[in-house]
Image (cartoon, rainbow, N blue to C red; front, top):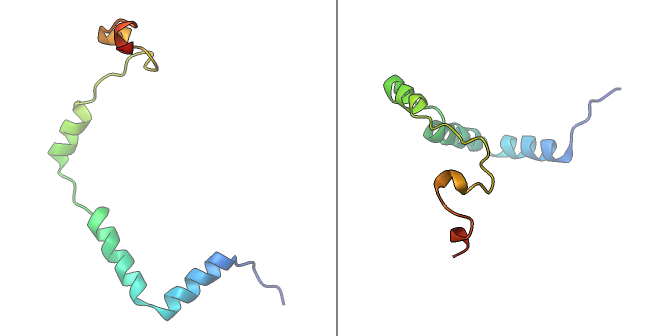
Length: 74
């Protein structure tokens, strides 16, 4: 009989959830706390519109901020 492969971790999680069915309920509650939210369309639109353009070269570039290289060492 051909059986599909099941990793040790997958088997452990499956058995853990079978022994403790309240884990699934806790997962759904946790997801609802952090992810399942109604978005305020106006707030999201303002967030998208408030994007600040990134300078062409950002790594180590203090000149675009008006800082001289010798001043940044102090």
